[in-house]
Length: 59
Image: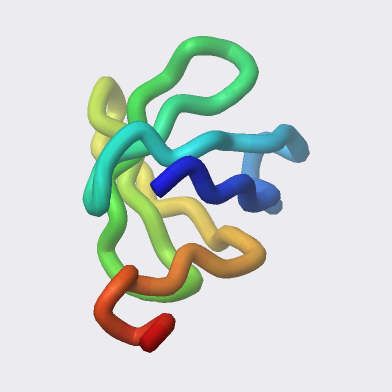
């Protein structure tokens, strides 16, 4: 937990708060959809991100 990644859609950084959820520098919640994709919870928009691998993949 506690991974950082870059959100190319908003040009800001986000920090994971659980395996599936993250918060960006503007306070928006993001849900992990894949290693390089997240969905903004308020708007439902998909965001391309630098990388948010699953903890199970890190073994």
